[in-house]
Length: 122
Image 1: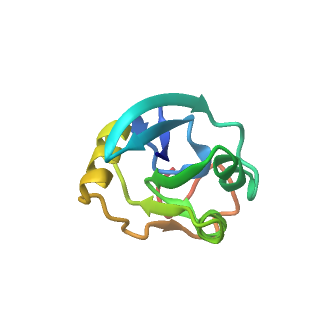
Image 2 (image 1 turned 120 degrees about the vertical axis):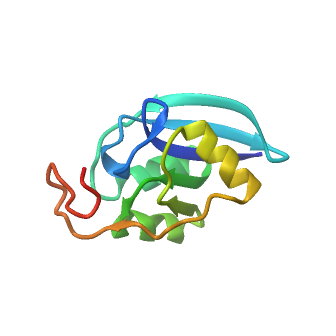
């Protein structure tokens, strides 16, 4: 069983990982979703969310884009990062499980965590 977290705006993949409203967490066994839940984003603080999701047992994270710092922390923890996803969170996970969702490498560069990310328009 693996856990996949999708940074979301309710049921839709968010375009900015750290500022998502919630994480849709999918438990997967034999490439099938067996359980899903939504948890509120506990807050955007440098380095916090990758550790929070790691502590939950998440092994894959899907988002529209993500800052380099978060990607580096996920990589250090052996968590796969898929960025460039769009659309429905569950459909993104299903595409990942089929092998058709590939990371585009869409990284938010040094936006100083202000209200807007110039790279991704959020």
